[in-house]
Image 1: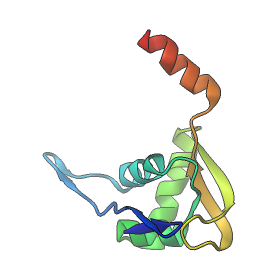
Image 2 (image 1 turned 120 degrees about the horizontal axis):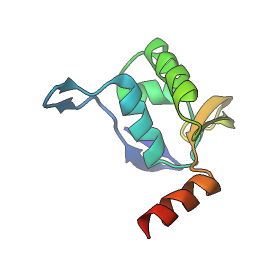
Image 3 (image 1 turned 90 degrees about the vertical axis):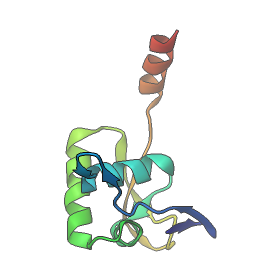
Length: 103
């Protein structure tokens, strides 16, 4: 369970799907997109996902390479330490394209 500002937010324990378990990268993507703009450190992500830090770092590297909505930060919203973090933010141009497509 991840706590941000004293509030329980999300637990991303790996869930089983019809085809097997959800990938670590997809699990981390879902967690970060559910707490939009809250930067989280590797250790807090690893604890929330119940996997080791090495697996989290590999997933984060994959996210940075594959999706421009993920950004670096420096203050973890969960543990409040000043450490390298990752956060999800949908840029304005991306939101506008989604809104235009929905109309």
